[in-house]
Every structure is written in C-alpha cells, then in structure tokens.
Image 1 (cartoon, rainbow, N blue to C red):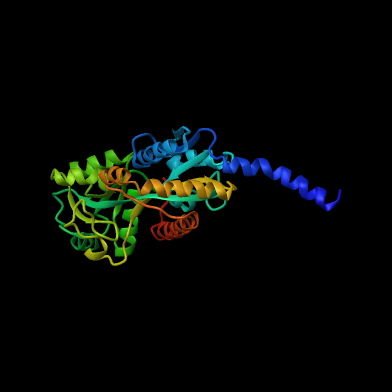
Image 2 (spheres, one colour):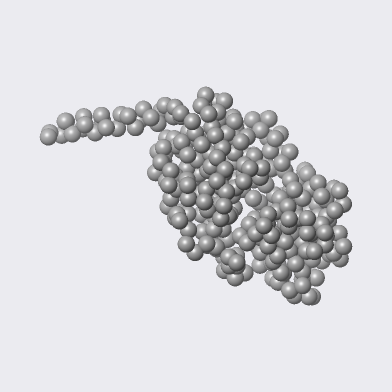
Length: 320
C-alpha cells in the first residue's frame, strides 16, 4: 500500500476517536466515591456532579464503592475504560495507601490520570476539656514529660486523622499512643467522653463540638487561620514550624484517558469551583473550593505520596 493510502487509512481510523472526544460527554458519566454516602468526598462529588450535569446536559451519577480504605473503589476506576465516563474523587488516603498497603491491586502512579483539585479542608487539633494542655506547646511538653501516655484517636489506621497526628508526632519529636476506631464519629465521641485525650478531626465535624464546649481546640492544621475560628492559631505558629495538614479532594480518571477529555473535565471543575453558590456550600462544610491543572494535580499527588511514605517509615506505621 502506498504512503498516501496509508495516511488516508490512519485518518479514517482516528476520525471516530476525535469525534468522540469533541462530542464528550454524549452519555451518562459516573463519579466513583470510594467511601460510604454522607462524608466530605461524597458531598463534594454530588455538588460538582450536579453542576456538571447541568452544563453538559448529561446525567452525572455518584457511585459509592466503599471498602478497604478506599482501595475497592479505586481499583474499580483503574479497571474502567479510559474514555472519560468513569471518574473518581480520592482523598489523602490515596497517597497514604501507596506506602501503607504492600500489595495494592493497582499502580498509584501509573494507572490514573490526574484531572483536577476540587477542594481543601482543614482539621482541628482538639482535646478533652479535662486535659491540662491548653495549647500545642503544652501538649508537646506533656507528651515529652510522659512519653507514651498521651493518647490520640483516629478513624482508622492510615486515615487522615491518623496521618495528621502521626505527622505532628514526627515533627514535634514526641511519642503519642494511637487508638484507632472504625469511623470518625466513634473516635470523636470517645475524646468527648474522656476515654482518649486527643484527636485531629476535620473542621466540619469538630467546630460544632468546640462551640458547644464538649472539646477544646488547640490549633488548626492549615497554613493560615480560618474564618470558622479566627482566633484559633495554626499548629505552625503554635510551636511546630512548617507543620501543615489540609485534607484534599482530587478528581482522577483512568490512565490513557485522552488528554482532550481530561482537559475538558478539568476546565469544567475549575468553572464550578468559581461559582459563588458552590463556594457558599463548601464554606458551610469548612472547605475551600480549589482548582489546579492536570499537571499541577499530578505534582500534588506525587509530592503527597513521597510525604506520607516518609512519615509512615519514621513512625513505623503498619496495617493492623
């Protein structure tokens, strides 16, 4: 076959793919949430999904696939067709699992295409009001004076509440006892009840209990203070310079999803993040809408995988 004929065949073969990309989406899109309904990731997926559906004139369906710390849902995405019709909202646990779980059913770096950063959500360091520590410096002093006696609750090994406290222990050079629970509510309830002394919980859950006097807030984990509690200092300005922990929510697609589709979804996510009504809804959760290009989102994920690998090694964290 001559060269002109070969080129013609190649163009004909590429035509349907190009049309599919320009016509995207032409059928329903699903957003996998690897957690049960009701959490921050689920809420964000539904907020963004509803706006995408309005703009695209196609249903955008949230599919909850909980289990194994987010692994079950993420494996489902990895095995989905790379056509833009399957997306997923992942959290910090996605980066943590890369080092915490020795045998993942997917490759964290190779099996996914970063699409967009949707939002960030700070946490609060909170203690039972009976604890003598009134701020982070006093908490660190207490932990140093009595190593292994300060206890902190988490929603499970590798969870954001666990890793943010492990990061604090690592950076402050103290030893605290991890008490894992099956869920954030149980962990928070036992801190309020006095069975455990401390936890680090997302602002949307912790702030109401602080305002009710059931918990004492020592600091916020973000780089800057929050309008939710403007008088509350950050951990960094309270004695642990450089400490920053903000839960993030990232949209992924399967690897090899066409760049044109990834860029279109990313641009749509950025548009939605800029809507005043979306900002209002996210602020009510204690979250901040965010946006990042696919390349910037990929850089964030790579940095987070490296960050948590270091903490996991230093703190000798293992799945129990």
